[in-house]
Length: 143
Image 1 (cartoon, rainbow, N blue to C red):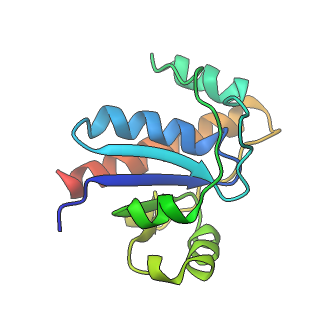
Image 2: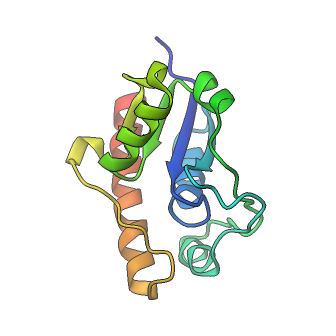
């Protein structure tokens, strides 16, 4: 199967998944990559600290607008990447047809990426660094 559409998930879709979406788009320019949140803060901009952390890498996520994960996104996705094993469980329970295509972003290193929301900048940097690692791992597997 050719994996063409990736959906990146976090809780609110304003911190981790927008960072991962931007980095995956850069790493996999021939793929369609979108992000959403399980409890998505629909219509909300990316967290200012996430914007700052990505700007340090020369990546602009300032125009990102959060959205809620829905059935259509799940049906369209070839691969769904989450930030935690708990999110994998939640998604597979809500959409049983998704089993087999939902993985953690850091699946290959068996790590969860903690939510930095409302935490100091070092939590965002730690999340960003794990996201970079996960993106690198998926890039190797999908290219």
